[in-house]
Length: 378
Image (cartoon, rainbow, N blue to C red; front, top):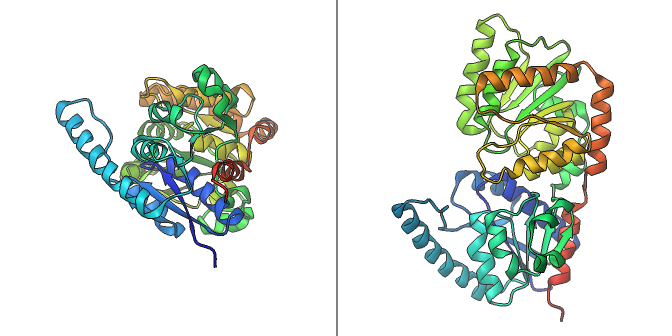
């Protein structure tokens, strides 16, 4: 029996970091049966929730995000040193053949240390603009796996040769959606109604939640139902918001879920989505051909989600709607955007076809092959 080949994955803290890594691990397990993925993640509860059911080995790192206060920076540097000691121990004992950075602060120490020990390294860079961690690590790795060709406009000349346009990895179940009726049954939805999916990604999005609930107070949903993924921290507020709609005489057929790893079921029933435009959300929307209204996260300085959304909007796959960070203004804009789409099946169909043309459903295999190319032979 061949010796297991350890493949290191570093990153976490959100589904946007973890789900692409899980997708690549699934592909590697199929393409390289001796592969043994090991995830170095964060101590956030969401990491355990997401990684636990996969069966992949995972190890939370002490690393915490940097906070620009004296106490916050001291805590960050202490966690950096502790994480460095942990990673060095893993590198000695497990001798990984290759490492993949998944983005975010949880990737920094592991990829830096692995590269320093001559372990071949690659990055997943699914946003148009590389995040700070990827900018920091880019010069240390051999390959950068990108979702968008536009990323080339946001990296230095010396790093352009490392870019591989692989797409953003999505899990195999999303690449092969279940029958709509089965997915609807599992989600307790009416299979005869069209479904408007609302999602702020794995952690939820308060301004999206508020805008949608306020907007629904003035929209009549004929033949539609709402599947609202609230995020765990926002679930109580979202349920209370829908109760207020009912108390106010608005009959909104809705199913509220705080979090689900079964996004294949969600996209299988989706006829239209209101979503953030994180990289993984964009990848899943395009791979599954779901037309969308995208509300980019408005609190990032570089507004990278807006650039992601712009790619889909320019292709006709989505409508970009800036998040005004105000419940009433967002709701008014959203209502005027959504109402024409709810009752224009031809428009939704055209957006769906445009989304599919952008999609790269085989991205996880593409990234896995890049990693296999980097692995030492012999």
